Length: 266
Image (tube, rainbow, N blue to C red; front, side, top):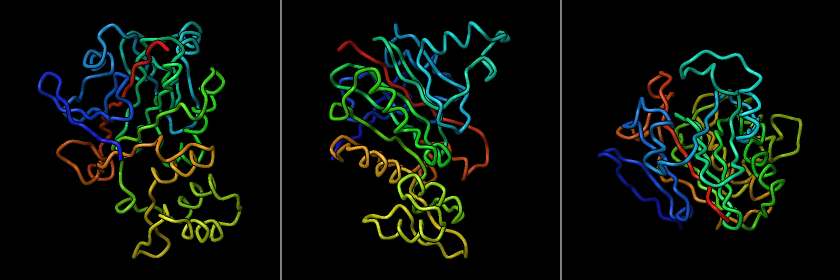
């Protein structure tokens, strides 16, 4: 088991994972709101360059040079609203001292690091992004930059737990299709329920199930050949931990907490 540790910065709490210990990183709590990554990065590495996106629940991954290209071609207003950022849900570093960030409420923040190259990625994996295999997409991008699967370390931060995440059977089947190669909704659900530690749990309401999105992401990574020893899952549910985390399901308000990691030299 990988340890999850609480730290404070200027009196505010955030989490780190022992699996990512060589990298400056953190899963920050709602106590940091409404600070942006441009401020929160100071808690990790004051000299790091900062990158974030306008998140759209897709599977598009950006690198810093691609963001620079987007900025060069865009007409944007001054300020820091979402229109000033490229639309995507994952970031990969290309150089040392790049801080990459994602915002989440109930979706899963995934931080990935390569212990040989020092490269990192930050991914926003909600059910839609998971259905579109955004984590394998980020891993593929890292591999294109020289990463080997066995050198990756992946931490999935606080997110809504499967036991309380009620979704329609259709949504569960759409997400499940990312690991079960069937076209039929019932066949996918039946196959998911046969998986050890199934990501689909029963629900009392007809046509509904409970869905463990982090478990589906784990299964996607296992399919790629990544071992469970390379993956850590935070023992916190955003919905059930109101003292530390915003939850869209709980509050029905668009408030987020940030998760980030800084690349380092190989």
